[in-house]
Length: 354
Length: 224
Image (cartoon, rainbow over all chains, first blue to last red; front, side, top):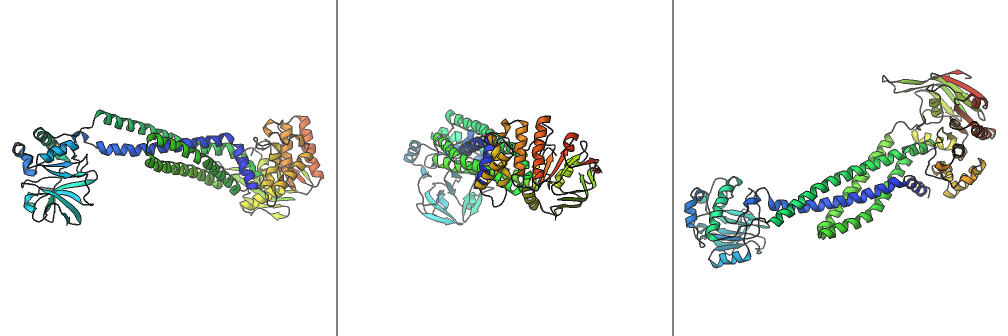
């Protein structure tokens, strides 16, 4: 009863700063929530755009040798010799984007006799791939194979020995597997298969080739439209502002705690004079913080939920609310505990008039 | 009641800013006695008061309070002694401005063991009547006059029935008439058997006490 009385009086004696801390907490939680949520959006878009998003392209048909003879390769291209990957976009380890085709374009390619790999299809967890003719006997099409601990589903056999490429696309990967005679520098050779990667340093070359291929095969390229670019710029901009507000709000939270303590310090010293132990004061101070948190939590939950609903990301919103609340509470408690520890370690307890 | 033997206190010891506030002070104050401590600013009288009030510790010497050696006591034990045996009246009253007079008076009891909330309230009301401020109980102390605030401070100092009352310039901020009334009140407590030690600059106030000591540069020069 006495502890409640003391806590109530502690709250009452610093009504203004208590209300400020509660508002500050709500504000911080909403800010953090906004930041977490925006970061998620930002990262999603960031990976989408990556460094060289301008090079988003479609299709590759070459091996290392062919790259040295663009004209020859261009001439050799025909739907029968090529293959098509249906998917949205992806980012290679090396930085190349391989991407794809609208359903319509995919259908056209299929009808034209191109071998197709539908990355959107379910291959039971295996990676879809194509094999070159030379190893088709070993790895028949339409079957799953395990190579070096990786599971591959062979979607088709390329009708020539020219090989070629590999892509990783979004949720899955598509590989072309060839015999080792096609092994290029830097390619990974596993169990008779070559996994070739197109390095980012060859990006220009690849892009040039793609342009040529596009012209011949009439395939579409994915180029981010203005709306998408705008969205990315908007999210980046709001995120930067959000981070600043969150930083300011964190500083506000810390400063508010400290100023409240400084404002009440004289009262604490008076309490010491009349017989309070330092521990009593510390408990009082921490209890006040807990009450502030207890009041701010449901309010900030409500406010953050509104934000999450506004952003239309319920699950991610929920996660970011949890993070935001956690972060704000941790900052609040940490600063309160630090101040309390500082008070406990305070050497002089003399009242000011000393 | 109070027995100080060769008490020394140096602030910032071991640094170039070291200040020797008390130099081997010895002083004895008997139960039921009223003692005025006089001296110029910086002479060490407040330091002496804080050591007697267990708010500060002496570097050297021994200090007995009510027959108990308190010089080696731990911080928590000193808090209990302050709460049970000592009542403080400070120059700036030391009240909590946002609280009412009654709440301020109740406060020391909030840190006492075995006193219920009901008992706290009852005791505080009784004391506020005793010091003549019952009608102010519900008022916030920030709205009271200096004399009224000092009465609240005195009520708070005696609510725990301490044996020793320490007053640091209790009348410094008051006019003569109010100061006299406050002194009357304090001396009436002495008549009840309590011990009073007052730090003051005012000779007139000191003359109302049964004994006066003068302190200069950390040494008691007169009336030891």
